[in-house]
Length: 132
Image 1 (cartoon, rainbow, N blue to C red):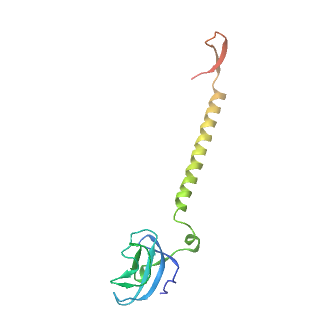
Image 2: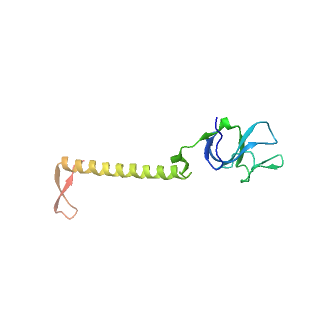
Image 3: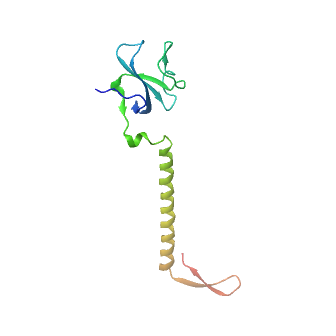
């Protein structure tokens, strides 16, 4: 099994993270991967039991065995965490446009299919009105 490279983007526990440390630690045997998570759902700030392995915001640091780390595809690594929100907004905008276009088509079709009936306007002059 190959170890992740420092600075690489990875997924761990369904969280995107950046590898900040790879190596031995004072808190446990073996090789550990120190991660900086994008959100404060971790366990530390890059230090454990008074030993600093890397620096990050409080609750954004996490240490895991290398087997718990999954690399992120290169295309995914460049995506910002806000991109899904932008994609969703774009999709909804497209859906709303389609719905509006379909509604206009239905109205136009109904106008073509409905016979015009002459009626009197409030002024008493005849005009055409769509039947319901």
